[in-house]
Length: 461
Image 1 (spheres, rainbow, N blue to C red):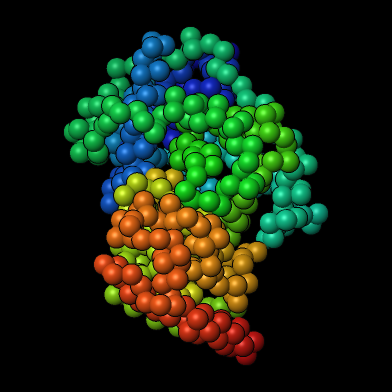
Image 2 (image 1 turned 90 degrees about the vertical axis):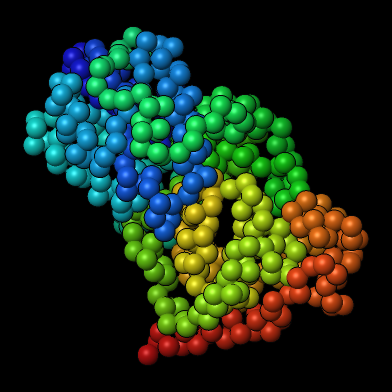
C-alpha cells in the first residue's frame, strides 16, 4: 500500500460503488476515513440556494451514513470552509493524503485550489479525480484543442470516447471509524442545517437504483418524452447531481438495455456539454455567452415576474409548470423550455432572473446545466435556439398536453373545463375563475424579435 491512512471527501458523489475517488483511495491506503464537510458558503441561504436540493442531499447523506455504519465505519461530518476544515482534520488524524472527485464551477475550482494549496503546505498530497461526467472537459476537444461550442459536433466526438464500465467497491475493509468529527444527525441539528426525513421516497441510492432498473421500460421515450402528463422520463437528474448513482451506471444501463444510440444517451451528453461550456467559459454565469445580444434592454417588470413565479400568467401550460415547480421542486423538461421562453420572449425579462428562480426551487439544481438551459432558451447561449424561435404557449399545450391532463392537475381552476375550451383561451377570453393572460403572445413575440435584431445591429457598431 502507498499510504497507511488517508481521507476521502464525499461531495456530489454520495455512494460507495463506482465512486472514483473512493476506489482509488481504497486501493492505495490501508485505512480510509470518509468525511463530509458542510460548507456554509453552499448550505446557507444565498441568491442561488435551493432548499429542495439541500433536503435531497441530507436524505442521501443519511442513507450513505447508514451504509458506512453497516461496514464498520461512519460519515465523519464537519462544518466550515472546506480548505480550512480539511487542513485541520488531516493534521489531527495523521492523514498522508486526501482524495475527492472533481467539480467544475468557478466556485468549485477556487475551493479545490485552496484545498490543494493548504494541504501541500502541510506536506499532504491531494488526489482529484474525474467522476461526475462521462468525459472530462479536456477529453472532448477540437483538433486544435479548443472546446466545442456547438452540440452536434461535440456529441459526435464524445461518442467516440470510450466510457468505462462501472466498478464496485470490492472490499470495505479499509473504511475505518475515527473519533474526530460529528455524527451526521448531531451536526445537522446543532448547526440547524435542515430537517432529516425518514420517508426515503425520492433521495438516496436505493431510490436511484430502483429508477435505474426502470430505464428499460422507457422504450417509447423518443415519442413520449415531451408529454408532461406521462411518467416517461428517467427522474434521475437529482441523483445524477448528487451522485447517488454514477453517470457510468446510467450510461451502461441505457446502452445495454436500450442501445447506445438511444436518446437518453443524448441527455447525458447535453449534461456534459453544458458542464464543459461552464468550465471553459466561466463568464457564462454572469453574462451572455453570445455578446451579440448584450445591449438588450429588458423590461424586467416585477409584477409580471411575480405572476410568472407564482403561476398566474393566464397561460395554462406556463402556470401548470410553475406550480409544479413550486410544489415539488420538479418540472418536466418540455415545460421548462416553455416557461423559460415565456419569461424571456413574452414577458421580456432578463433570463438571469429565471435562472436564479429555478436555482432556488429545483430539486436537481446544477449550476452549469441550469445556466446552459436558460441561455439556450434565451437565445444568448452557445448553440442556442434562434432568437426568432419563440414558443407559442397555446400551440405547445395543444401539442404536448392535448387532453389537458397535466394542466388540470396543477391548475385546478380549469379542472372542470373541456380541453377545447382551455386551448381556445386566447381567442374567446379565458374561462371563469382563471387569470386573464397578462400579455398578448403575438404582440410580445414581435417585440422580442425586434429587441434581438436591434441588439444584433448595435453589436456591429
